[in-house]
Length: 114
Length: 114
Image (tube, rainbow over all chains, first blue to last red; front, side, top):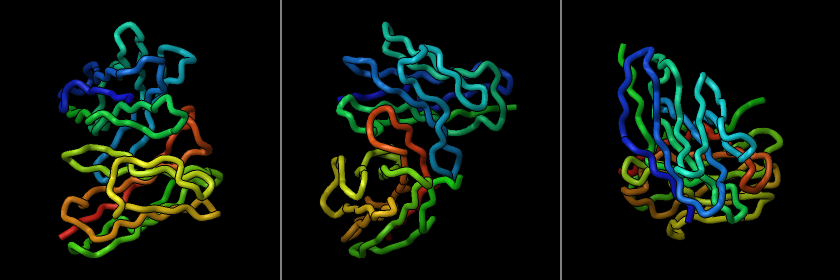
């Protein structure tokens, strides 16, 4: 079964610093990969999606992620953190069974300090 | 276009009761999925409906059930509530079915079982 592992339940950065949130997937074939963000008391918002069209995927709010097959990774980055980026981030993968069911990682809480 | 809406947003029930949650997908979307989010287990898939048929089901007991109507609106029901059912229940919709589809999430229904 497909799975994703997010390294670090909490990541702390200063405003203006680089954001790096790690995600590794397990898959024998290239999967579809997603990053979602969840703000307090809200649902999940799609940041970006990898569908094998390009290895570097640009998303909303200045985020991007790079698919690296050799490392089975799909890390999320943003060059300069903003206070409004503080939220929980989830990496997710869809199975190869034909369903659109998402399997989520445990999430990484991003803390941004002034 | 209006997003995914879920009602009610908050619910308090007692053990042994049953509950029904409602989800209205984005207009034109035919697939609806449900997820349970808890601090301990994270985000877990419950079931997916497409064209009024359950297409996929997660590993949850039979107390959890759902259905989809001809207008794509969906309901999920939990019978004989247990304390462990306290969670945020998220509904997601997508235009069709398949691994290439992007799921768009609603704000969730927060259920507290006392």
